[in-house]
Every structure is written in C-alpha cells, then in structure tokens.
Length: 295
Length: 227
Ligand SMILES: Nc1ncnc2c1ncn2[C@@H]1O[C@H](COP(=O)(O)OP(=O)(O)OP(=O)(O)O)[C@@H](O)[C@H]1O
Ligand SMILES: [Mg+2]
Image 1: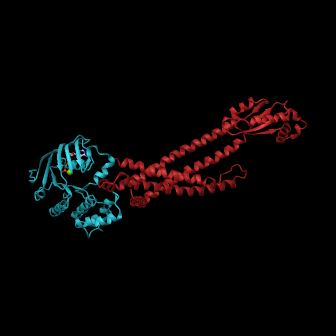
Image 2 (image 1 turned 30 degrees about the vertical axis):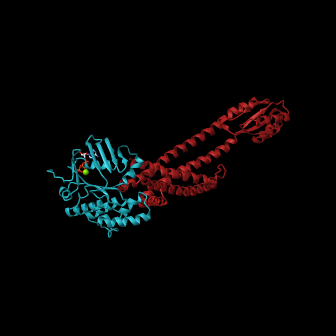
C-alpha cells in the first residue's frame, strides 16, 4: 500500500465521520458519557483505596515484652521484630510512656494518679506492610523470645479489606458494562455507515479492491469516534474532578478526606482514556465489518 | 483465457443451476451467451467473478484456478475482468468522472495514473464532455457507457456484460453493442449475455446457447429460438 492510498483511506475515514454528522455526534456523546462514568469510578475507587490504606496503616499491632526484660533487652527484641518481612516499622514504647499515653486518653486522669508504671509492660507498636496477612505476621511476632502477648484488631483489617474488595469489584463490573456499551455504540454507528455505502462496497469488490482497502476507511471512522470521545471525556473528567475536589475539601472541615490532585493522575488518566478510546473504536468497527464483509 | 470443465453449480436451496458446463473462450474473442430465463447465464458469470464457487468441475480464468482460489487472491483475479450489469450500478452521488476514477482509486492507482486514464476511457465511450454530470442527469444509454468506462478503466483482459442492453431501447442497444465490439477490436475479450436475439443475429459472432444448466449449442452461425 503506497503513501497515496494511505492518504486516500484516511480521508475517506474522516469523510465518513462528517458525512454522518449527527450519528457520529451521538456515538461520540455516548462514548464520552461511558468514559466519564468509567473514569469517575476508577478515580473514586483510587481515592478511597488510598484513604483506606492510610487508615489501615494506623491499625497497629501491639507486641508486649516480658516484664522481666530490662529496657535495653526489650529494645533488642525490636530488631528481631523488624526482621520479619511484613513488618514496616516497630516503635518502642516504654512502660512509662505507655502509662502517660493511657492516662492522657482518660477523661478523669486523677483516678490513675499514683499508679506505678511497673504495672504495665514495655511494648512495640508494629505497623505492617500488608495488613491482609496480619494473622500470619502476628503469629511470627509471637514466636520471638521476649514477646509475651500481642494485641491486634483483625476485625478492623478485615473490614478494610471488605471495603476495598467491594469497591474494586463494583468498579470492575461498571467498567466492563460500560465498555460493552461503548463498543456496541461504535460498532452500530459503523454498521450504519456500512449499510449506507453498501453499493459502493459492492462496486469496490467487483472491481477488485482488497478487503483491507475496503475495511480501512471504516476502521479509521471507528478509530476517530473513539479517540474524539476519549479526548473530550478526558477534559470533562478533569474539570469535574477538580470542581468536586474543591467542593469536598471546602466542606471537609475535619480533614477526613485527602483527595489526590488530578495533576498527579493526569498522565495515567489520559493514557487510559486514549487506549480505551482507541480499542473501543477500532474493535467496535471491526466487529461490524467482520459481520458485514464476509467473503 | 477462460476454461470451464464439467462445471456444476447447486445453490443452497438445492436448485441445480449448472449441470456440467464445458467451454473455452480464447483471449480476444467476442462471444454471446444466450438462453432462456433461468437457464444459468448469470450463474456462469457469478462463477467467473468468484462470487460463487463451483460445486464440481474446474474453472481456469485469466491465470487463476477458481475452484481452489484463495480468498486473498480473489481481488487480483477480479481486476482481470470488467463487469457490466443491466442496471448500470453507478454511485448516485458521484459524478461520471468520479464513478470511473473510483474504480481505479480502490485498487490503489495513483493520482497521476487516474488523471491520465480516466479521460481516455471517457472519450472511448463517447462521454468526454459529461464527466461532471451525475448519473441521474444522463440517459440510460449514457449511464451504461459510464459503466463500460468503469469496467474498462483498470485495463482488464476481459469484459463480461450481463444483459447490458436489457434496459435500453433498440437504437441505444445497438450502439452499446457496437461499442463493445469496438472495445473487443482493441484487444479485450468480450462476453455478452443477452436475450436480444435480433441483436445477436446482426453480428456474426460466436454464440454459446445454454438451456437448463447445459450448453446446447456453440458456434458462429447465430442463434434462432422459438422461445
Ligand atoms: N441465489 C440463488 N439461490 C437459489 N437459486 C438461485 C439463485 N440465483 C439463481 N437461482 C436459480 O438458478 C437458476 C439459474 O439462474 P440464473 O440467474 O443463472 O439464470 P439466468 O439464465 O441468468 O436467467 P435470466 O435470463 O432470467 O437472468 C434458476 O433456476 C434460478 O432460480
Ligand atoms: Mg441473469
């Protein structure tokens, strides 16, 4: 195929988009809508995942040290805890410090005045890399000499895990459904274009045009619909995201939410949109062409 | 060259359209293919253009074995044949010039080739001044000339016409037939399917007659029927 042909085929594809202006417009609109919903779910999911991870990392395991150990001995247990692969960090809290912390958390601190720090144990506040295998790690910690007791909130870590799973699954299902919807829309638009030009196609076959020559303008048409859709969707997504982020941050006086700035995810969103637009456009048109251009 | 040997064609409906056709057409020949309605004329053309594959027998068309041709070779085989139909089959929203250049375009010809070739074939069919007209601004005879120009533009070795004069009055029909004869005299093989017996008998050409899927006569002495 020479340069001459490529130019002609591209021109034909572009012509197709404009020739069927309203239909193309409708297809682009639906694609844009689908991409925005897909993108929004991904971004919401991403934000929530990050928030959940942050909350999760505050879910510490406490490892209590044998009260007969001196502070120096207790600290040496810490290096062993740190050697466990899944341990991110183990912070030593002396019994005095623990008492202080405990007392300060009580409404009526006076009750506890005079309690001897010796009644408490030295401890490590251990944060994990991966909270999903908390149970395993806790039992590893318990194997260490000098660790007499641990306390961990499995229900919290399980809860976070469930939230995350539900979130990811919902997003995946919605994305899948919308992918199919946009694939169908573009496929249908190209199918109508094929029907419109049935006679032209018959003549092309008759005079000996190759199948790839017949197909290419329609693939270009689908490709353009997909790419135009993805570019528009990207900019709308950007605007809507920034707007919502601003609103949420303004309302969120407690600073509960921390929203990822769009500029951080911008390259990722752009590439994801372009790839999705490209695939949906090209695959959508190929689906129709395959059905239409048999033999 | 075209060579059919014991060609049979059975449609999916079970209709046996061709029941063992054997015939040879040499390069440069002009032949009429005649026969009553439903005898299998169009079926033979569809086989020659690889729209259909024979159920049995062998077919050799311009260097291609059609009974076993690969799908990706079919376009190249078709470029050796120009086809003309009774209903012209022009693209309504393209001008005469565009209808003809389209056929070159879609097989990958360059602008330069197109600019050179299209005016030449339009002149050959006598439409050099009508390039900018749309098909519906032309008479039936003129439209058929556009179709002939389109069939010729890629310089095929053979022209196949399925009832090219079926929609035309006797005078236009004669003109089209004379144009095809002229094209043949320039070296292109021509096969014309027709019902117009008086027209056939005005030319002294080879006439192949088919009836009920079988060749019933083949010769130079015209064709008479009591149909
Ligand atoms: N697509 C098809 N499916 C099934 N049967 C068909 C098909 N096309 C043609 N036939 C049958 O095959 C036989 C030959 O048809 P064909 O079109 O070749 O005849 P023909 O000689 O061209 O007739 P006409 O002069 O009327 O054009 C007829 O009996 C016809 O009904
Ligand atoms: Mg017929």
